[in-house]
Amino acid sequence: MSTPALEVSSLKKRFGGLPATRDVSLSVMPGERRLIIGPNGAGKTTLFNLITGDLTPDAGSVRLFGRELLQIPTQQRVHLGLARTYQILTLFPKETLCHNVVLALLGLDPMRWNVWTMLSAKRHLYDAAREALALVGLGASADRTVAETSYGERRRLEMAMALAQKPKVLLLDEPLAGLSQEERQQVRDLLGRVPRDVTIVMIEHDMDSALAFAERITLLHYGEVIVEGTRAEVVADPRTKEVYLGE
Amino acid sequence: MTRSFVALLVVAAALIAVPFVVVNEFYLNLASQILIYALLAVSLNLLVGYGGLVSLGHASFLGLTAYAATLLYNWGAGQVGAAIGAVVFSTLAGGLFGLLALRATGIGFLMITLALGQIVWGIAYRANNLTGGDNGLRYPARPHPFGLDIAGAPQFYWFTLAVFAIALFVIWRLTRSPFGAALQGARDQPRRMRMLGHNVWLIQWFAFVLASFWGSIAGLLYVYYNLFISPHAISLQQSAEVLLMAILGGATSFTGPIVGAVIITLVKNVVSSYVDRWNSLLGVIFVVVILFMPYGIVPGVRQLWARMRKPAKPAERAA
Image (cartoon, rainbow over all chains, first blue to last red; front, side):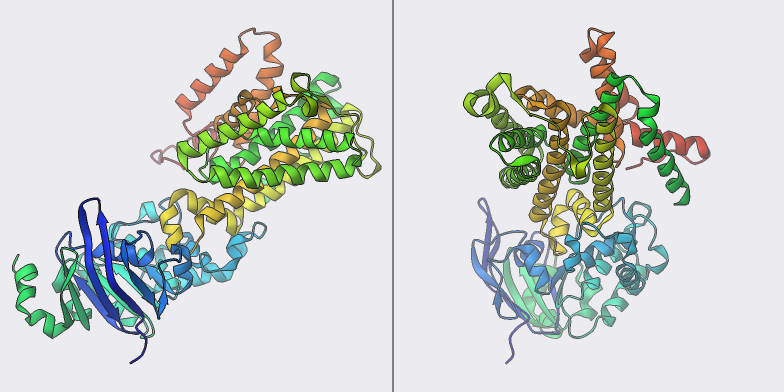
């Protein structure tokens, strides 16, 4: 058996008296498409925050391709191949879409410490940014500012910024939330086109809209893994119906 | 691009011609002072405007450089040795101050820079043996850079203008550089920047060091101009005035702090000879500007200009 792309073991996090993550272990193989579902407050986003280092766990470990991440600061984890999108949009509203993606590309480029070159002269960065935007269907909007775009476009910009970094493990936090039917289909098509060497872990609150995407599903409830298995196994499991579909 | 380049040439020519028009030495020296404070304000604005880090201790770098240059010269380092040694010393101090101040952001950062500035001031004021205390220190004579005599007012003005122009160009490049983009990104969305692979802390610390370096260059010009340094030059009021220059002129624009430096230096030195309560006048100017142009003079005028050119378009909140 090869090394998992992402391995979380016995992860625990409490906010004061409230346990957000009780004891979560999961392991995602390279190239896998994993869906994490669970009702509100199940600890899905907290799990992502623990994986990226936005939050420090009380106990447990997070490994990326076998490498322990806990002592590594967030920005360093990104250099190791981790990328994520946010459920609550975290963009640069006054800048153009293109500039937003350029900031993502700069994050992995040693050129970000250059204080002398004109950024606007770095055509290759802007070309790569436009390419990433075209991939998510925003090619025509590259020069608009984020403030001028719709919610659906911003969601896709989040995706473009993460994809532009060519991550090995991509964490998507509710990428379909708030999108129209048509936009959802666009995002699903886009996810279908992501190369297989990228491992994708996706959180979705609405199970139906993401089911087709998932190969394996992890069901979280009150900070614990309740069910895990293939799509068919999880859907068929009575506990899934109990905590999730039955509500 | 070409139009702004022509405008730049006109401004440069006008600035070079100043000593031919302004023959009164008082006013010519005032022009040199404005340039020195404009450089100090522009360097501070790297932190305030571009980094979102409001510092109330920036005058300390002016002081650290001026004191260090004077002491080094008195200890026999020579003009060049004193200049380089003082700027290096002050920039290193900037590195240390940044290390301490960046433990916090926002108000915390402001309070730590305030405290550090007060410590520098306190040392200058109390360490009589070293700094001469309240009496200050005299810098013996202006240097002869590249063999040029800058003792006279016009010559010193041109020298200051040259240093100012080079500094401004380098800082302007920085604001348009990849690092400049990262600095502004770290100001707007620090959490996202981390998740994009940027080391936000290091970006801000590096900006702090660069700001203290350019502040030190201003300090060197300051001590050459006055040939004297005393605790008064690095008091809290001085740091506050520099910050005011940046905010009054418009911290979100590159040229704003220069405009702010012109206005405040003029009010302090010229208007004060006609108006006793010039500090109150400064306060009134500040209140009026912020009332009508919340982002400062330069962004405010730009907005007005844009509105006058195409009145049909509804007013947009410019950054």
